[in-house]
Image (cartoon, rainbow, N blue to C red; front, side):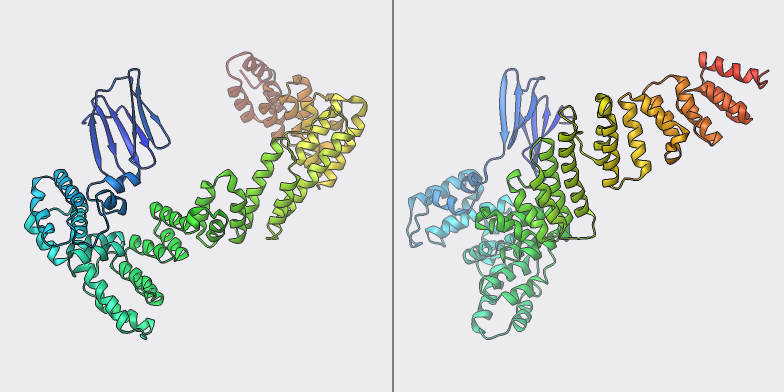
Length: 568
C-alpha cells in the first residue's frame, strides 16, 4: 500500500477504486478505506459501469458495486428499519410474548458483535417485552456502528440515562429520537420532547410567540447541533407551525436546518439555505426531497414549475440534469422564473438542431420569438425575426436561382450573400441576376456597404471570379475607397494569385508604411525592399532583410538594397 496504485477509477458516483498488484482498495464517500487481498493479473483493467466498476483481466472478471440501500436497511447489523424488524421475527404482538423468532434474531446479533455483548443482551432481555428487546439491541448495534462503544456496565448506565438518543440528533430524525427515548429513558432528546409536548398539550390557547419563548427556555442549556431543528419538527408535527418556524430560525447547524425545512415542507427556504451554504450534497438533497413531494417524483410538470421559485443556481443544475423528454417543462420553469433569455436560448438551441437536421424549424423559431417577446429590449426578438426572414429568403433564392444553388449549411446573412455571389461563378449567364440578388439582400438586412463589399470580394476570390474581382479594384468604380484596399491583396494572396497581380492590389493602399507592412504580410519581400528604398526608410530595409532569411529571397532583397547603394 506504500506504492502508487496502477489506476484510480470511480465506482458509481461516490467511491474511488485504487488498483494495486496485491489487490484493490476502495475509498468511500465519508473517508472510509477498505483493502481486499486479491491476486490480480498485471493486465487487469478497470471498466466503469453505471453503478460500479468491473475489474477485468484475460483470466478473471470481478464486478464491484454498492450494495442496494434496501438490502442494507434489511440486513445490516444494528438496523432498526421496519423491513429489518419484520425479517427478524417481530410478529407485532402485545410486547410481552416470548417470541422465539425474536430471541433467535438477538442471538444472531450477538454472534455478529461477539461475546463482549452478552452483558448488554442480558440487560436488555430482563427489562423489556419482546418488541422492546429487539428494538433496543438493534439500537445499540446502530450506535456502536457510529462510534459509541463501551462495556456492558457502561451500556446499562447509558440505557438508564437515556443519553444514547442524543446520537441521532445530528441526523435530524425526531421520530426515531423519540422512539429511542421511549426505550432508553427520559433524558436527552426524549426529555425535551416530553416537556415540549406537555407544554403544548396543557396550553392549547397559548399564542405562537409565547410558545416559542417557552420552548426556547426549555431547550436552553441543552443545545446541540440539530437540537432546535428536532424540536421545530416536533412542534410542526403537533400543528404549531408558527412556533416551529421561529424555533427553527434559531438553529445554527445548516444540515439540520435544511433537513428540517424539507420535513416541514419549507422547500423554498430550504433551497435558499442550501444554496447559501454552497454544499453540493445538501443542494442535491433538497432537490431530491422536493421532487419526491410531487407524487413521488411522477408529477414532473408540477415539480419543474415549483423550481421556478428556487435560486437561479439550483435551476441551472436541474436544467443540466433534465432529460431530453423534459425540455418543455424546463422552458416553462425558466419562463415562470423570469429567465426569459435563458428559456429563449433553450428553444433557440432546439431550432438550430432542427435546422441542422434538415427539418422544418419554423415552428421552433416562432416559439422562440414569442418567448423573447416577453422581455423586450434585449435584441433577441429582433434577432429571431431576422432569422425568420433569412429562412424565407433562402427558400425564395432556392427557387429563383434554380436547383444548382445551394444555401450555406450555417445560415447567416453574410453566408447567404456569399453563396449567391459564388453561384454567379457556376452560372455565368445569370451572374448579373446573382449580383443584383446579393445587393438586394444586403439592403434588406441593412448591411453596411463596407461589410457587403468585403463579403462579396472574398466570395469572388473563393469562387475564382477574378474578372469581376479586378473590375471591383478599378479606381473608377470607387469600391476600393469604400472598403479597406488591403483586402484585395489579402484575398489574392490567400488564393495564390501571381505576385505581379498581388503587387498591383498592394499599390491601391495609399499609406506608405501600410503598403510596406502589406508586402511583408503577403510574402513579397522584393516589393517590401523596393518600398523601403522608395520611402527612404533604412530601418525598414534592415527589417525586411532580417525577415527574408538566408535563401533566394534574401539575395533578391540584398540586390535591391545594393542597387540603391544601401549596402557596401
